[in-house]
Image (cartoon, rainbow, N blue to C red; front, side, top):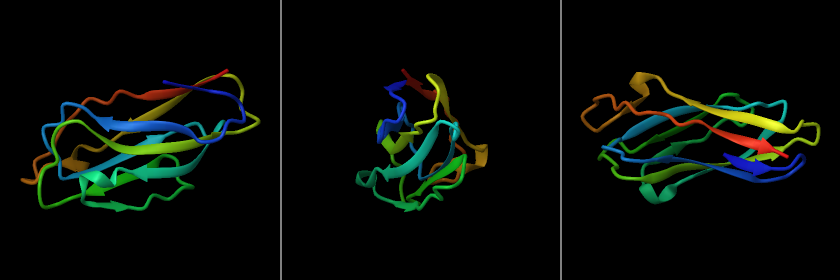
Length: 126
């Protein structure tokens, strides 16, 4: 979870992989409460190589998509860092950040689906 204040700008949330057996393509969806949060920037981790498909900032959930296609990327790494602005009209409390994926949207270089556990995040406004 990330603590923030009403009206705060550039609240950063990291989406990371841990104990990753190897993926070559990944499409995730990030749902957030747009009555309190406004997505303002997505920073893909360019150090892992591959290609990123630009996200549509008005979409909620927003699609986060990366593909290498040539090799598996293993181990722990940051996938994206997402920056939110907290709206001045937001109320204090907890706002869930919910990640999801379809089974066929995360796979390895052999085109075998890679299943993983998602740990959702939240922004706590005080």
